[in-house]
Image (cartoon, rainbow, N blue to C red; front, side, top):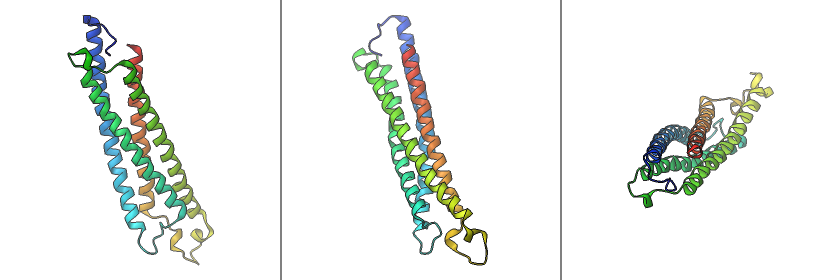
Length: 192
């Protein structure tokens, strides 16, 4: 950080922190991006196919869960941006001009923002998962789903329903990766 003096020891420590920021930022960025894109595609497919008339996925509980899943993916976009920002902070820390380096306080604020964004995304996505899984459990244990005498297609759990559960799991995993990256970097800064 710019609070350090330019002694060889502090320069080496600064270079190590900068490299840690860049590496952790890129790892977090790519994990979140890949999981977020996969989740987004699955949820988009679900939204397209569930709009068909008579789709068994047209259920108010599932719709609310998908809404929360989409919100979790949108919040994940903020987490992806912040992971990319960590790489830029790492680059700035390597600057030979000390005035171009971010201050420690500013860097900690960015990391805390990353923590809050990923915590909020995790909460929203978990609430969405609870709504979707609750709806699917209610469908699976309903009396009409057990008996074959009165076949009701709205009680069938489709593969697309399970893909939405997988998309939620991917989104929670992506937020978890963002949390781990932010916590790791915050720990590295506080030790310096």
